[in-house]
Length: 201
Image 1: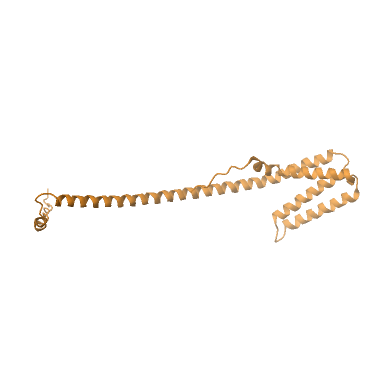
Image 2 (image 1 turned 30 degrees about the vertical axis):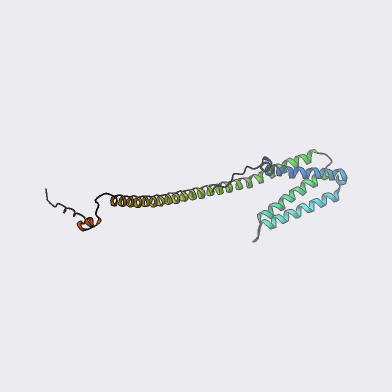
């Protein structure tokens, strides 16, 4: 009747919260590895990342406007653009301060965007839980009413059976009494009840 309550593991609860920081940190680490392997002060690599970032921005703009706009595709395109821009700057720069500053900014923006979706998801989850609670309460109420009705029918059937058994026992006991004459009782019939009095006060 009741669904089992499953407790989620703490890693499953913490993974969505850590996803933005893990994503931006991964981009920063890969960009610094790229920087150490020849991307530092490379105009060609910087131009490539700039073109890719601008292309992602354009894709996000086209996905968010028009008749067939899709917010998921637009969000993915803008996130890709930000990641490419961060990777380009972190790969081109010779120091670590600017890449770290951009990483902190990108992480803050990612958490700000994700918080909105987390609030929406939490609100939808609460609405669903309330709806399921109402449904369970209604089903429990219906089950209790049906159980009471079935119990009443069973008790009525038991009472009828007990009455029939007692009546049969009384008839058998009366027939077994000495001097009992069934034909005399049938001939005498039942006594008539007195007529109701209509005397006014």
